[in-house]
Length: 62
Image (cartoon, rainbow, N blue to C red; front, side, top):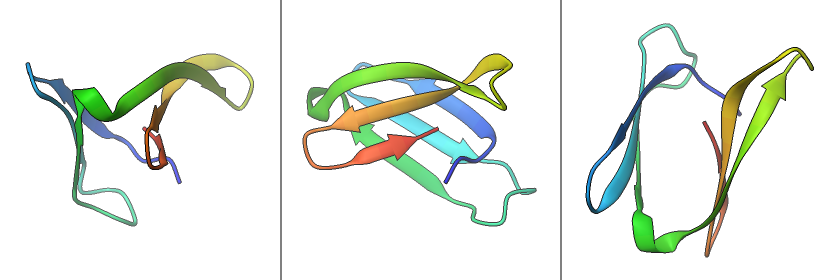
């Protein structure tokens, strides 16, 4: 499920914090070494405004 919020990149992690208007809120933290691919995606087939992050163990959509 996609959610709006802020994305932060550190030297060790990719961190996503949802904003308070989402149904589900919280933080997702992914170690950079676990990321195998990042793909941009279009929502409503109009504009690239979503990231699909594929890790060694799961798929995360931001």
